[in-house]
Image 1 (spheres, helix red, strand yellow):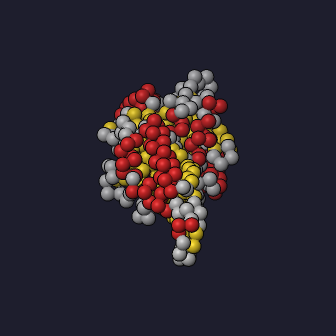
Image 2 (tube, rainbow, N blue to C red; image 1 turned 90 degrees about the vertical axis):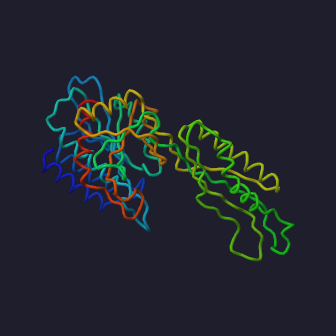
Image 3 (spheres, one colour; image 1 turned 180 degrees about the horizontal axis):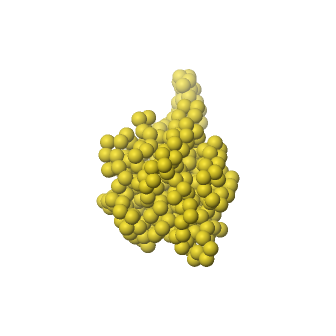
Length: 361
């Protein structure tokens, strides 16, 4: 790959890193990427609101392949930091725009720059727009520390797990702390539910990973003259398959209702950060692997899916889609940690990955 392209993309990545913005707030990041593509390529750039596309259109092309990168960062204090490497993902996709100049591939290539991946809100919006662009297949990648730099990590079937945040809100009646028998303290039901989590996840069973991780809990107030009248339990649920997620949710809801009824308290449920399982389409997955191998990229098949989630799973419900990992380095700091930043040495492989799929995917 030409050095000036890599240097240009590396500089863009560093600039995006300094512009880190939370999910749904990627205004500066989006504006900078759009400006970069308009100034350096002939792609047709379209503002879609919180996200945007850049289209390489070829006369007479019979199909359109979409390639997606995420733009958002993680919350950090009052601001945000790129602890997941989305600045590198977006820079690599913008770099593809440079590589597509004056190329004839026999297909249209749609570059999708997506907002709000970290919360799961962006994928569902962008995926619904794919049909309007006539997309036939879609691809993406995530950088993965703990694997050799630049190695493409493939997997058939489930690439990343389904997950969602679950809040169980127990409601009772406050009483004087000296007379707890006159109240309805929901803390006991919440505590029994928490203690039963290992058994409940086992009961949910499933064909793969089933997890309910205790994220936190709260009950009552720091007021020692009163007995608690409310309690909340916060869980992060993870499963390999969607049907197992539904079984796990049902198991938890039934158990919480039984515990609440035992004490004469109530319980309600709410959910957030809902991610579907990222299940690679068989045909798209095969095309991805074949394209990468043909381009001379090192490939490694993963023995199991990742426990974390990716909202690219929404794309699979719209068009045949597949996702891969790209190794960030064996000893590279882990994602979502303060020591992490995107490894710029991976940029050439990331651009080669996108170009291989534009050319052969």
